[in-house]
Length: 168
Image 1 (cartoon, helix red, strand yellow):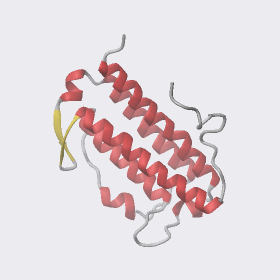
Image 2 (image 1 turned 90 degrees about the vertical axis):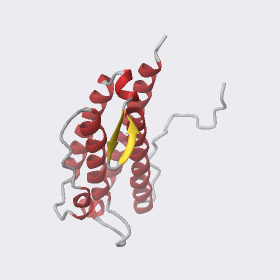
Image 3 (image 1 turned 60 degrees about the vertical axis):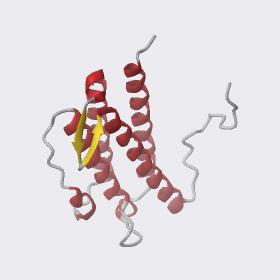
Image 4 (image 1 turned 45 degrees about the vertical axis):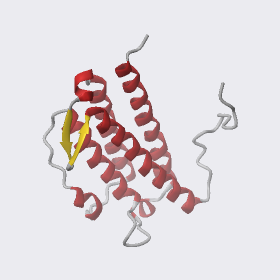
């Protein structure tokens, strides 16, 4: 029988993993111009959202849980004029998530229960992982919506899955 920590790690890593192919699929549907297009000053381009996700995951998991130095410059995630290519963005987000998964996998019960301050918030290690999972899912949803809006296309994330199935 699994411990709560083993189950928490497994479920968290599952949720982190499911977003990489979704983001990749969206980026592969879009032109480089569409990846960096922002419809208005209140919205972010998909490229900027991916940079933001990398900064957030790095600050919350790599730094806080993993012990790396916190040198995040959050505003640059939204204002940089450097336009990474589709391939570079996919590689960057994949690398950041893979490292985060390794750190989560190594966390002990005590690390999940220990509180620390991250970005001004007082969170347990478990709270940090929950934040990253929901934050990644939130922005993956925005990326998906924007891609569907631009391409008028079903991205088939659940192809072959009966979503009308009832609970046991």
